[in-house]
Amino acid sequence: MRDVLPEEARRWRMVERAIVDVLDRFAYEEVRLPLLEAAELFTRGIGAATDIVEKEMFGLSDRDGDSIALRPEGTASCVRALLQHGLLHNQSQRIHYRGPMFRSERPQLGRHRQFHQVGAEAFGMVGPDVDAELIQMGAEIWRVLGIEGEIQLELNTLGCSEARAAWRGALVRYLRPRQGDLDGDSAKRLERNPLRILDSKFPATRSLLAEAPKFADYIDDDSVRHYEGLKRLLDGLGVAYVENPLLVRGLDYYSRTVFEWTTERLGAQGAVCAGGRYDGLAEIIGGKPVPGVGFALGLERTLLLHEAVHGAGAPPPVDVYCCVLQPEHQGVAMARVRALRDGLPNLRFRVHAGGGRLKNQMRRADQCGARWALLFGEDELRENRMGLKDLRNETPQETLGLAALVERLRTAGMDST
Ligand code: HAM
Image 1 (cartoon, rainbow, N blue to C red):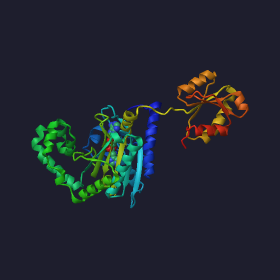
Image 2 (cartoon, rainbow, N blue to C red):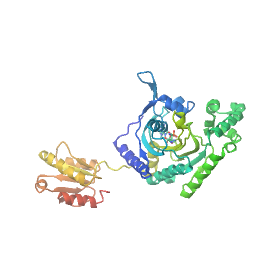
Image 3 (cartoon, rainbow, N blue to C red):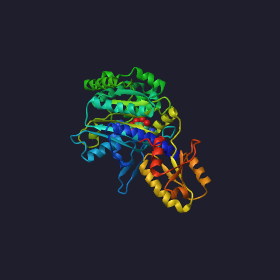
Image 4 (cartoon, protein in one colour):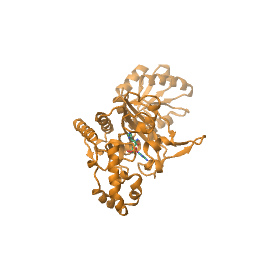
């Protein structure tokens, strides 16, 4: 679990804000959900035989001895919360959430035990149109972040649960007599979670799979129509995709559409964002059936990719550093800066604290990356004015009243409103 220190946190905020802006512009509404849930929510929702539940959940008991768990993902919690508050009854919802998720995985680049997701979920809509909207929203996020050239969309359909069960049976019947040729993990998965064998990277397993029963022979007609409809919409929107029949996802709740946005820039942790349709989940966790579809993007991986493309630069933490020449003027200076903050809401003002010589205060201004220094000296204050020094250009210092100063900083392009 990592600490995110100020410089990195500035990049996080910038990227997170850009992502959430996209979700807002698609009119998805925010929910904030607890980090702890009854462990059973995930055992049932994600599936008892998945790696997440079997190996990766951080579980604990509360005082009554009930099993609770730190959430390993947000979808099950989101469905639980909306069901519990009656927000899925005869209505559709478009929701987003973000925050830390917890999985006890082996940490490496782009894989952490506490990581952060931004998720979007849509409920109450059965057609492929909303699947396409979610994918379009993902594409828009990559465009806004300027990383669209590094990410590709992989798409698949898992059909309805009956079709999947029939295929799963055929796959097990095919693989059982060949179990000895499977890699160790796949052999273990054969009875409990055979579809995950399709994820195997081992050449011997993969060559066995080449001859295995194909889902195309088992899929139901409605799911085919749904999938074709989705592809047509994506084609119309100009969203490129690669069909990957081996994409099965690591959570059991999916039906029909599944997708992953992947990159080659991050080595083994190539999935930046993933999701799909989960029409059976509400019922599995004890509600009435409600169709749902969504995705979650991994913030750490998105940031790594953003850094790989744009570098690790972050905006400086301070725009205007305010130097107070005499300690007795501190209060007046703070009051003036309050008015400036009102007039220039997009600029960050830091008022020097602790006194000291002007030279030292100017050094602080420079160190924190401020573009401007604002000087509150005896003469300026008497005349109801402030000194303004551009720290990045060799222009002479100016002395300005409040209104002129606001105008000056705004026209200098410092305030983006
Ligand atoms: P997931 O594929 O388990 O899906 O996770 C989504 C994304 O979270 C991954 O693509 C990855 O970027 C990030 N992620 C997962 N585990 C880690 C980790 N240990 N460290 C860093 N990043 C990680 C879900 O969680 C589903 N709830 C997605 C969804 C929403 N499906 C429908 N709606």
